[in-house]
Length: 313
Image (cartoon, rainbow, N blue to C red; front, side, top):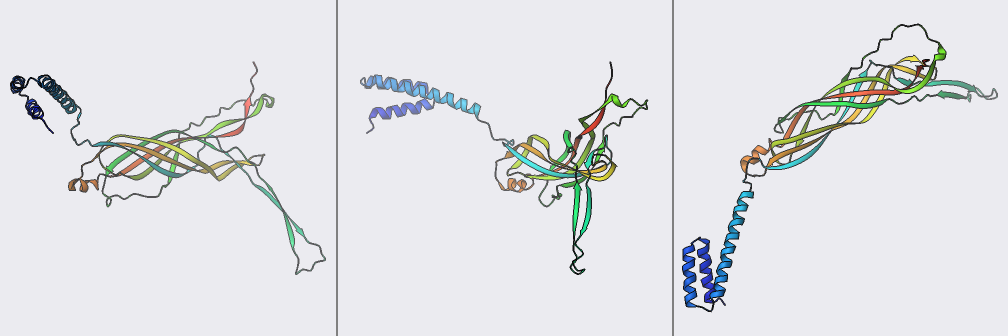
């Protein structure tokens, strides 16, 4: 059951919320003269109410400083996207000719005994196959650059190739060394060693298009990071050159197959307000169209046997 003191405290609390200090003092004085029994408890209660009011005011001011008002910047999100690609490049300019295996195959025909009739005559064939296995071609991605144009388009406006296989051209950037004519050196002054040699260094340009879907309406991109990685490589001889003594031959023209990915990370701000206008705008601002030119600098090498000159001191 609520006592009269309870209602008096409620009335003082109401005055305190209105910041009326004079009325609070008058009300406290009246209660002290009328009811001395509750003076101490009433004074302490009023003091608690005042302290709670001060703390509440401080908290409200602090909250007003920390609250971020709604703005058009939206919330920050992150999205990862992977673009796979496969390229075929024909190469006919080498710094040093690569070496491929040569297949040597011989066959001999064995006839059956003369006792068998001509109708049942059969023969067996003996096949001799000789294969050599030179060192495989190695590759290294030296540098990659990406130039692109990004834009938001509606689904009907977006037309791009789904095919991720590209035929492109490799431009050689290696410098051919000019051999100087000199007197023949003694053969005993050379040794044969197997070392990695540079086959060639090339720049490859790939033009591609891509689209990325976002779940939210994108307002602004904070950061777009990319990384290029080559995952598979294959060298295919197309035209043979000089035949070597060890069952191999040099390659004057070949084709390489490169498989890789472009990994993208988008950090963007998105709109969280949902209304009809935003819903219509979202259809245009959640599909990103990318048109990019990817430039790769690829270094090819192979372990080959070369002659090294020995110099006397």
